[in-house]
Image 1 (cartoon, rainbow, N blue to C red):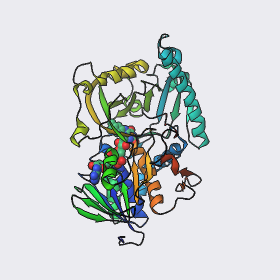
Image 2 (image 1 turned 180 degrees about the vertical axis):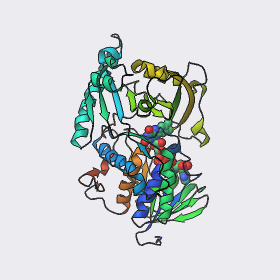
Image 3 (image 1 turned 90 degrees about the vertical axis):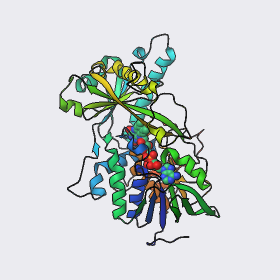
Image 4 (image 1 turned 120 degrees about the vertical axis):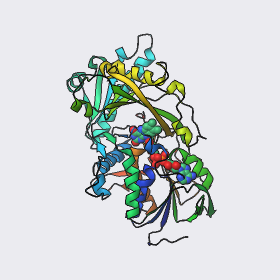
Length: 441
Ligand SMILES: Cc1cc2nc3c(=O)[nH]c(=O)nc-3n(C[C@H](O)[C@H](O)[C@H](O)COP(=O)(O)OP(=O)(O)OC[C@H]3O[C@@H](n4cnc5c(N)ncnc54)[C@H](O)[C@@H]3O)c2cc1C
C-alpha cells in the first residue's frame, strides 16, 4: 500500500464539487495526505448549478441531526476554513424555510378525493415530523394560518391549514463552498488536480491499489467517490458496486419584479417557501438578489449517459422564453395559488438547470463499497448535496480514520451529544425496507 507524506495515509478523492471539497478539508485536517481529482475544472457538476438552499426540516432523524450540524458549519464557515478576515463574502443567509400546507378541502375539487386525502396526509406527516425534529433539538414550529398571514401578508393564508417554520434554514453561496473549500485543503497540504478524469483502477484482494486517470496513475490507501450524478459510472469503472443513482434534470426559473409588492428589506428577508406538499405539489421560491428564484419537480426520465454539455440543455417546453405554454409558467401558476401578488409582480427572465442524483429512498449513499473495502462512496444526495456536504465530510473522515463505533459516528462539538447511525446511508441498504425521505423536493 502506498504511504503518504504523513503517517495517517493517502486518500484520493474523485470529484471537484462541494462534497469533494469539504471531504478534502476534513481529511487534510486529520493529517491524511489528500489528492483530489476533477475531470474538468472544479465546480463542473451540480454544485455550481444549484438552488443552494439548506434546511434541517427533514423526515429522517439522521438527516435532521446532520443538517443541524451543516447549518452550524456554514454559519461558522469562514472561521472553520480560516478565511482571511479581509475576504469573507456571505456564506449563508438564514432567512428560514416555510412549508405551507393547504387546507385539504381547498387543495383539490371534491371530485378529486385522492388529492384531498394526499393534502390531509401531508399535514398529518408534517406534525409528526415537527414533533420528531423538536425531540432532536431543532428549533422548528407549527404556524397557524393567522400567524402566517401576520408575518407574510402576501400569502393567501385563508387557503392554508397551517405551516411549519424553521428559522435557521436558508440558502448558501454555492460557489464559495468548493472554491474556498479546495483552497483551504491546499493550504493544509492537499493536492488538487484538474483535468484528471478517473478512468479505471487496479485492484488486489478486494482493495484498490491505484487509479488510472487521464493525467496518469494515482496511488492511495483510500479512495472516495464524490462524483455526484456521475458516481454510478465512476463506481463501475473502478470495479465497485452498482449505485442506484438516477440523474434527473431539474430546472430553476428567475422572476424579475416589474413593480414592488413589499419593501426591499422584506423582499431580501423572504424565506424559502414551499407552496404545498404532496403529489404534484412542492413548487418553491426564494429571493435571489432582486429576482425571485422558482423551482418545482416534474416527472423526468433518468439520463444515465448524460454529457457535461447536457447539464445546461433546456428543451423548449422548459424554457421560459418559449411562450406561456412551458414548465416555468406552470411552476409560477403553482406559486400563484398561494401567493398571487408575488407570482404576478413580474416576468420570468432566466432559466437554468442541472442534474439531481436521485436514490430510491431520497437519502444519500455514504459508506464503503460492497466489493472494494477501501472505496467509500459519498454520493446520491438526491438534489440536496450542498446542505449535506459538511456532515458528509464528517462521516467520510470518520470512516477513513476508523472512528465508527457500533455503526455510529459521534458528531463534532457542539453537537457531540449526538451520533449518526451510518446504516441509514449505507450504499448497500435494502431500499425496499429503508425509510423513504418524505420531504425531497
Ligand atoms: C437545479 C438544482 C437545484 C438544486 N438545489 C439544491 C439545493 O437547494 N440545496 C442543496 O443542498 N442541493 C441542491 N442541489 C443539489 C446539489 O447541487 C448537488 O447535490 C451537489 O452539488 C452535489 O455535489 P457533489 O460535489 O456531490 O457533486 P458535483 O457538484 O456534481 O460534482 C461532481 C464532480 O465530479 C466530477 N467527475 C465526474 N466524473 C469524474 C471522473 N471520472 N473523474 C474525476 N472527476 C469526475 C464532475 O466533473 C463534477 O465536477 C440542486 C441541484 C440542481 C441541479
